Image (cartoon, rainbow, N blue to C red; front, side, top):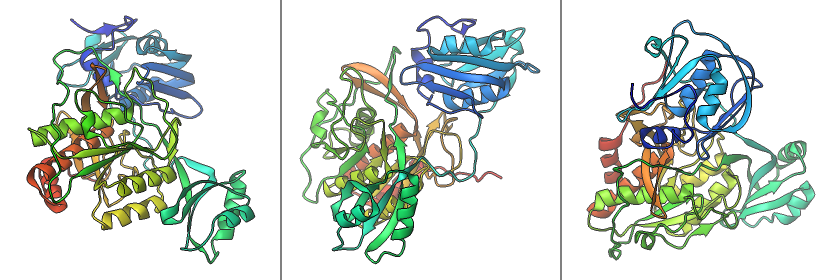
Length: 468
């Protein structure tokens, strides 16, 4: 058999071609019980601390985060115990499987296949489905010592915060909204109860953490699509279309594409980006321009307004996401692309999106990179067009397929940074792709939002069948 990796993988053998694309599907995950299992595709490293777990649940976890088609020799069982940090995938699999044989076979037209067997590869015939996360409602990553407080017009926050023993760590003055930080969770809960009947308070909400999306990974694959070629046109008399890209910071794109970027905004401080690697925001901006170029052909009047809600931090929050959306709307965005999110439902964030949507602002959001049906916000809010990833005509194995999903788009995008190609894979790429399609359709046809949504539904709509 040609071109497959087995036993001990060759160092660096998993970086190119279709296999490199598959590795982009991996996200850091927390595994079962007290054991931990983390697979970081951005750095192509695996860590594990597993005392004893059965083989099949481990394979289901690997299938869920990689998108690989895993085949196991029937009746093959063993207890897996391993502890290691930051190993390349091949070395990690060797330590995880130990006395078993394995082979990872790339496929140019489908996901790679991982064979795990005792006797011979041909006997690995039992397909292992990806693990599904719990279907119960998630509380998201609550920031336990914080609250989001919205006051009535004219009310002052500083004296109220002092009386509550809180620090004001963020504010959206146009909304009379404030981020309050307390010494601990107990103090935050006590303040929530005090504020419930306060005459100057409109709402009190929890704040949730939102992880920074991973950046793309490099690829050595040949015959890749070139960077988008697009000419900036002057705006028409009836106004231009501005895509608010609420994400991590966006770096210079090169290839004459920077003319499409408006002056960037930040709500979270100055970003500290690696000049040698593209950020997630950079890859989303170029993905938008790729699909925009496909729709407009000879040029476009569309501009992208980058809004950084992460700064130098590993996470952002629903409060800062709301700040970023408000800045994008105030900066003239009429379509907002949200390739980020969490399982934390925030009435405060939802109200902001509802208000903007009522003013004609369109929202497109990523559905999330877990093969579950649980809501992922902000995509799951009704005012947001939720986009999942499509692979080979089907919902990608790693992608959310909840009832809130309305659209599907390609989950893999090729972008260029410093003239080097990179893959980015996930519902993030799908949402950015559809954002470019939507903006390009309105720009090239001078259509309104209703006509654009009809076009998207006809060409990218998906129908989710509820699971029983």
